[in-house]
Length: 482
Image (cartoon, rainbow, N blue to C red; front, side, top):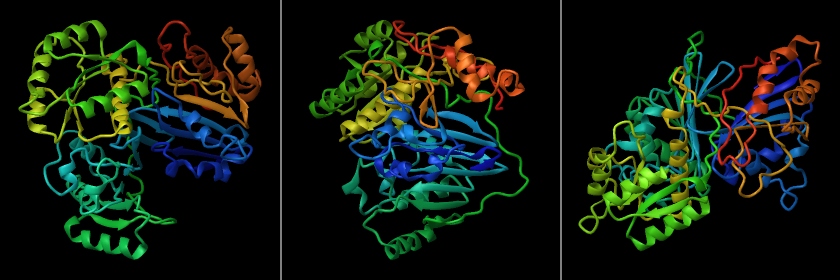
């Protein structure tokens, strides 16, 4: 957050849109300040955009002020996994394990690094109970937080409480302390405290876990706390050339590709079917590797879901058979394994991508499906060979006052509104667009206007192509801020 010549400017990073994480938005005074500018970042899903999700809690029935009545200029950025820059900060985003599409953020600047990971549950439930090794997605989570000067992590439960909270999307403190120790973080701030735990109970919980933390400084986060990290004068981190850009537009049409399903368990199959229906994604069932291969070649599915429940069902054998029939140069299809417990070693050898552990809810299944649909939609083959950025549009301005109609493609990542007035993109020629935005950015004879022409044209070119069945895909024009 900073104060420039025209007023306050700042950025808000939202992990997900569950109410306990967004209810402060309508009461955040700086969003009502005329002349202020805010960039709001959050996860993008195949459904409603970030802006639509935030506007939902401010509808007439729930709140007297609508999102369009904010006085500040607000730009909404829909994110997927990847990295991007906010001025001198490098920001990386990665999905967490929660019953909603949720992002962790890693911020790096001046040689210091801070990770915010809330809400998150260990992928392997045995880890939450203090058993097993960090493998698979749990290992990748540890790699994401590794070496952080400050890790702010969900630690709502204790290992004793966790068995009654499985699938709720939160971590026991014992797992988080172990994670911080193995990831060699310097300081660990525990957060998302259980609302039934008072301050004294939190202090006791922290104290009882400090000894096992070793060199990691463990403490409980609290409102108004100030934590100093890093060393002044150190060099800021930058996004590496092959990293995917988190603001690249990903608007997969759910109906155009399917998910392959080989799950015999009636309850799990019913839950997955309900999740796929809710996401608007077709389901193609199969029972043999040959049938799977035929469907893969014909349908180009988002992912394959297989059950492993030996000796009744040998999902590992099915996974190996599918992988052995994949031709050279074919895209790597994610395979999600449904099981009672993950066998990471055997799964890695067989080619399992990720695990969905029974029992699971519709919300949890939807989140897993969303993550892999978004990952498949922006696989490395779709990235520019020069810089690793996805070639899909990185910025779009749309009608900020009108919600997306059912059946339309998901909005592209950035939606802008200015003082409650919707910024609309016409389908006409670029001259009309230049005129419309020129009045807001600068007069035509001002050098600042010419510096923004590239950005303005890019916005025009990123409007969805109706009838084409796919989102428009163009390169982003670089435009300097006035």
